[in-house]
Length: 452
Image 1 (cartoon, one colour):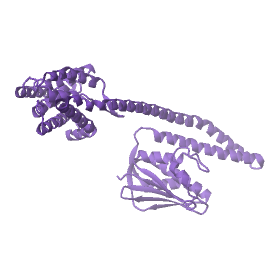
Image 2 (tube, helix red, strand yellow):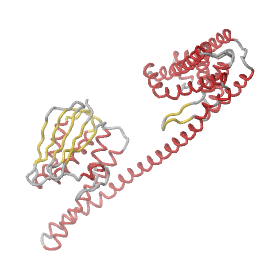
Image 3 (cartoon, rainbow, N blue to C red):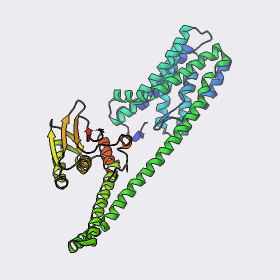
Image 4 (cartoon, rainbow, N blue to C red):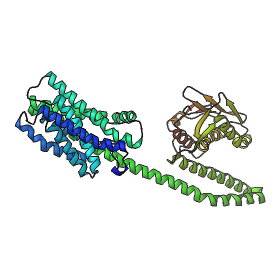
């Protein structure tokens, strides 16, 4: 896309003005070389067909992916180049592009540049492979080469304004554009050559390649429906995140009041039925507090805001987690052991990554028997650093493993959020998390992070 002319740099102005000029010069060369006479009168019908096709293609681009559209205008443009006289075909293709650009309200400068690009590519293609009345292997090869030349020239010229305006490397932009568009471009080029050749050798079958258009139309409808569904789903998920955040914040204050009052009552009544009831209420209030904290963490991990990255020493991070859970582990009679197999530092959001490791440690401490150790191991493999949490718990049932990291997949205790939070945090950092477990033999959770 060409920006407003007032914002053009001198080099960009030269390109935007120069490409149409080069196209006109090459169009004149093609006209002088090939003339204005049509090999057969019916070919003149391609002039209105090409114009109409170019307008429709510009007005109704086809989706070939959720975020990718393709303009089918290359098909009528190539047909005009291959079948109309060289003095007419390239000009017809360029005029159709100019008119189509103006219909969709592109600026005159952008429209002129795009038309000049098409005129340049079409003129070179017409010099190589315009089809006469006699066809053979050599003519078919020239037509195919002309279509390929048209696609290549159109691509390399189209990228010039974007490279000059953005300052990005030209070759990198060409590679990116080619990677995204080559299947559609080559398909349209092959379709144009097939129709052009068949219109001479087997006119009855000339329209057969167009049989793919209904399929393209149905595919386009399906992609549009999928895109709409994805947008609706994204809206629902965003609303869910807002709901989780709002609920956790709104409940936090009254819950803190309840816990304070329960603490007062517990100190006042230490025995009997009422004392036990208060103890149970305190335990449940504590469980609710942890769940609300995890809801907030999950909402935070789901947000698309950029990670607050900093250089994180994984040995220090695991030591912080061990310090935070030392009291809980001591109450449960579980030891916490750290093993630093290799020093590792990565660029990460320290708070989020710590939350992921803490959730794994929390589970390991709660499920390990008294007298057992929970190990936190920092290591470095071929792919990058890793954090491993090893427990001596009862292991995980095999039927739970496929859904283990999904939300609200509860076990005998817990909210079913800790592992979901851990997975989301690790994925946002570009890493993976997996588990090795066996009934009665404990579990080993491994976080693998991208190398730094």
